[in-house]
Amino acid sequence: MSKRDYYEVLGVEKGADVKDIKKAYKRLAMKYHPDRTKGDKDLEVKFKEIQEAHEVLTDEQKRAAYDRYGHDGVDPSRGAGGFGGNADFGDIFGDVFGDIFGGGGRRGQSRAQRGSDLRYNLELSLEDAVRGKSVDIKVPTWVTCDSCDGSGAKKGTSAKTCPTCHGAGQVTMRQGFFAVQQTCPTCHGRGKIIPDPCSKCHGEGRVEKTKTLSVKIPAGVDTGDRIRLSGEGEAGMHGAPAGDLYVQVHVKEHPIFVRDGNNLYCDVPISFATAALGGEIAVPTLDGRVKLKIPAETQTEKMFRLRGKGVQSVRGGGVGDLVCKVVIETPVNLSEQQKELLRQLDATMAGDSEAKHRPKSKGFFDGVKKFFDDLTS
Ligand SMILES: [Zn+2]
Ligand SMILES: [Zn+2]
Image (cartoon, rainbow, N blue to C red; front, side, top):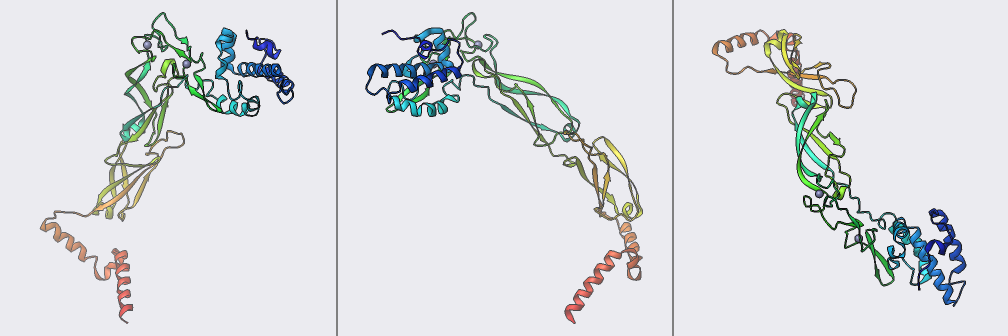
């Protein structure tokens, strides 16, 4: 028995949109539902025919195949859920199956598999991170085959619709009551096969290559920042779009500066005499040395803030500061003469003079004395 045209079965125009097809189906399905046509074998066949037409015409892939190749283009045994079997089953579960498989599975989700994203770990010196830099990086990756332009087919030939799944990329395996969609074993979900593969990429449409890329690192990046190079990841298979390349920034430790956000920190040793008398010292910045005035009577670990000598954030906003912590360096390797001078100096600051010259020490030792006196009284 030759099959009726699906459009004719549903009574719709060839170019009808899915909404109208569904509407027509609903109307007919109600009319010819086996519950209403109890026992009438002819009408049951008609109902199945309606279901089948609906099944094919509401599936983009199958409809396209049907439009092109007619009934030969679609294999009814690939139908979802119920048709051909228990009509009620199809009715009740048809939409549920439609939801589960229709979302992508049935349309062959693995067909246009985008290439993988890549991550490149880039180590930068603090100076380069702060100032920005163009770096050339070598990335082992997959690139689109230039011999076949990614199609995977030999020059002058082209891919063909898969004869097993007719381009759907999926086939339906029946397991008892259920129909399970599986990736087509012939084309592995692509919906197409390449009868004459490109000899350079063996049909994959991409080849392995170490790519050299020039990456512009913006000024102010910090460890943890990443720079996305859209489309510079691995080329997809069979001409699918490429993934992205992420350059992950890691800033190396600096011998002098510690960075915290936009601020830089450094310890600067100063002599005891400079701390006491005051003076000018040279401190390092990323742009070279600058002079820093040390006031007289500066205590150790005092912080000096040099505004604007920090880092300009990559995300905009102000420039950070350089914070210098001065640390008084205790002199070492003293000669006898130097020692004697220090003893003499120290003696002038002891006894009654202590409160004047060393108020902290005086206060501290007075406190300690009181502590012990209290203990023993
Ligand atoms: Zn296939
Ligand atoms: Zn190729």
